[in-house]
Image (cartoon, rainbow, N blue to C red):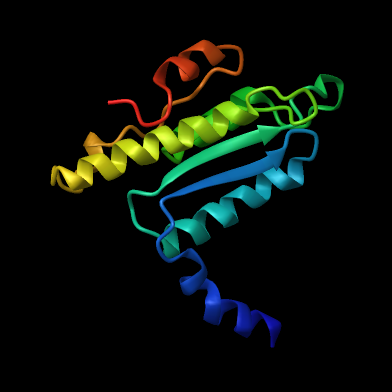
Length: 145
């Protein structure tokens, strides 16, 4: 019964979403496996132009890593999503993940406002943001033209 209730509100829950962060724990492979289901649900209930950032958290726990950066990057590229690894404990790339998603949402919304159309080739998808290269994200900034 709970599943039926959940399904009934799913569309309303996602309506109007323009961006999403799908976060998994790099030390728990099962969380990485679940991202595919969440991604499918997102795509089934949102606009095709939604900006999706795939985020591997707990990057500071190198000795406990269960999901390689290479596997996560490959998944993100295959699914045409952005990718970044973060460490909430060390405050590594957390703000940058949000800044990048907001920047890309701004670009998508601006393109729509200019009536460029819904050409998927024009959208900046499938980029990987290097964990160590935070300067590139900071240069973009939110809402820059």
